[in-house]
Length: 203
Length: 92
Ligand SMILES: [Zn+2]
Image 1 (cartoon, each protein chain N blue to C red):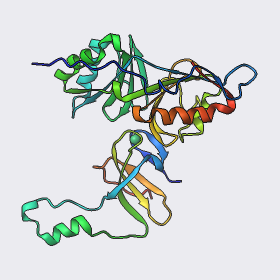
Image 2 (tube, helix red, strand yellow; image 1 turned 90 degrees about the vertical axis):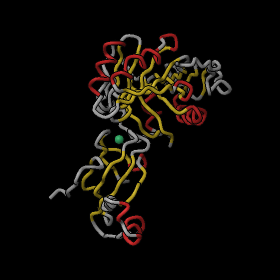
Image 3 (cartoon, chains in turn brown, cyan; image 1 turned 135 degrees about the horizontal axis):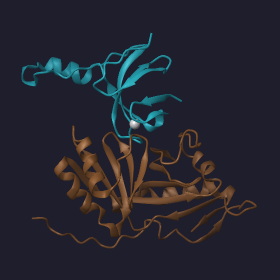
Image 4 (cartoon, chains in turn cyan, purple; image 1 turned 120 degrees about the horizontal axis):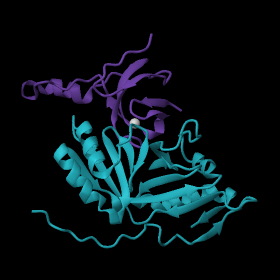
């Protein structure tokens, strides 16, 4: 019988450093980078066990209406986003209110998939604005030019020496950066330092 | 800077990877029938070749997969890469 475990409410790892405002040296048209925290977001890791990837993908598509993306890609479907994070492994994201974890578990376990809730272990920032690529380029070896990193491209890589997932969202110059919670303040500090010369807004 | 083509993620800087070890060693097939000398050879003894060498690497900051890499120890040129089970050959 499954037991119900009640978890304490989640608090952002950045609560103590997140002071809304404009900082650095803004350009003529305002801050070059705007950063928001994506709060209240569930992050659920999905692994397909050996030889089950096709069945797991079918189960996800049938139950959640989202097609699991190919390597190096991300996809939106319904209220969810899926990011390829490794061979036969994806991260699914959706608002806490969607019951994503339970729905995903019910759908994929019979097909051979495993589900691990990472929501409490991730900090997710959304960066937008005309100087986002210049800011990120200071900390990663990935080519983020649209020719190499089109919309719905995602990569797990190093950013300011931290392990992150970078997810290029639809819309010009918007990137979500996922880091492990314990490194959130370090990432925040590095991003702010890198964006200072372009001006940045914590929103 | 060495760039390693990950078979899953594409070419990445080598600082996204960690070195795992010599990929030429084959684990003894029958542990019970393997002599201590053969275990010692498998676990501890390594050649130190100059030139092409087979190695395991871990894409620790990327897809977290283990890879096999054929690397020239003198020039650091990465000659081939693949999954751990792949037999790698240097391009001619
Ligand atoms: Zn990889």
